Image (tube, rainbow, N blue to C red):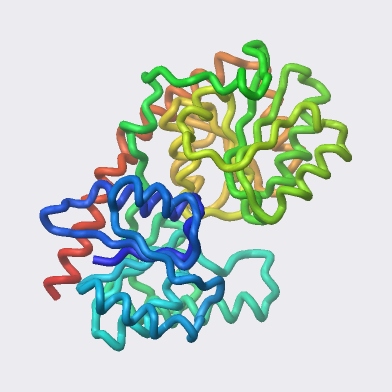
Length: 367
């Protein structure tokens, strides 16, 4: 069977694919992965011995690669296709239909969202409607995303299967390297961790503005920003403009996410929209106090003031105030983190997620 995703970088969707292919029942499924860009995910799959291929394309509806994709699918003797995300789907549907293969589509957050130009938003809604009506099954990673699909276009049918966490990898009881030393961060400092692609969606500039406000009243605060993206250079410039460049550590993406999470006190994700954020789930699994925007699927995982704190997206003052409150209250951080850890153990394991997805595969193959 084929798992296909747009890019080889590591993000929520890519982590989902990695976890899925490593936990599939190999007596029933023999996964092959197709990406349209290279990146760390490709290397990770190769190390795991999972067949992975790249057909280079940065475009949606890239007709120039459709024939290559069709030949690849035929050569690999694929009998079932699972598409992850809109970009991959637009370059898979035509080859799949020509080969008369069943297709499943997981929506890891819709391509249309607030802030888009109205014409662009309408075009993306039309594209998603086109895709979802040409699949054998659609999977949403949150109930919020399913409702958004129903509201955007009628007759949308989907099952909700929430993302899971690899609890063997994200195990807070393990001994991990202390990365604070490598970043010259002392044990007495309170570290906020932002581990995400630095894109508009993940709001890195809001993160820095809120941190700068909180840092004025909490000299013990440090911010660790791990990731890359088109806004990274602007983020570095903003840190200098706000005079907090010596309180923020920037680093490129790291694959040893549990190691980094173990060394932070607060995990913060001020996204403008989300599907069902795996980064938040991973931080919760590691028993970290989570601060996140009150958006989409995030609010389905984080229960405000119970296993994390939710703040209104784009409310920088509220975000700063929440970070300051947690920085000053280690007992609250521990309480939220413990509750978060228990919530993930009870509800969001990757094994549970994979078994639910396998049920979808079985239904598609028998109808």
